Length: 300
Image 1 (cartoon, helix red, strand yellow):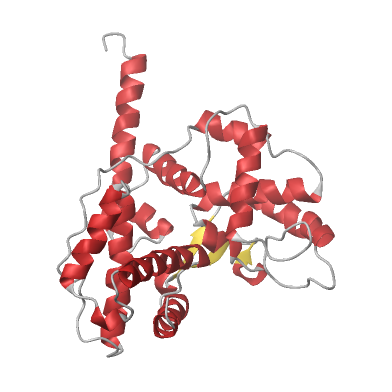
Image 2: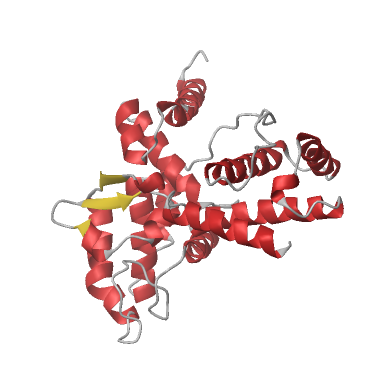
């Protein structure tokens, strides 16, 4: 990328971080998508973002499909670049958005992956232990399952935002939207034990801070670090397959709906701006009901 593109990209990423409050993980995706686009444009002799036309975008999409990228990946890249140009238009750094008339490929809707209650029990058993790291890992798993918070929200959680007396946490969600989320007795006990015992043994004078979850050196635990921890938990359990942090968020929502929670409450707990984002879980619960019926009804 030339110097001018780098400057515009830096401005846009700062906007995502400061104004939109996006996680570092999400920002990295935007950076990768935009850098890739700039390189492909450079191969066509276009070095300025303001010089990109609709026909150039069509050529970019052709290149992506020739690479046999999944529709989901192509849709994400289009969304990233459309957002970039909307920002540049707002700042009057370009005169048009060449992505404004580009349609996002339809993505096949997949039901969210989630754990059954028996599988969650296996994961909790894999966290048992008395070492500070064990206490931390158990607290992370209990909190993610108890609240359905995003991993980025978990890593940014501070001690002042945890109320053990009321069993609630203050969560800073996407778009600077705050919400209070309650948690149950299992998460309460795991958090209390970790904060009062495990965390104190991991933290040092040199690494003093108020983030709840810390790494083995005492520094703040990153979202990537939490993903590594979850991978290790599933390796220790008797479960096969992989785990991704959002599975615990999906599991939280699915188990609530399976046990009679209403959609609006789940929407609020998850921090979804739109009910449509939460409605995907009704399909999961319907599948669950059907499977239960087929398994247990004598005339199924």
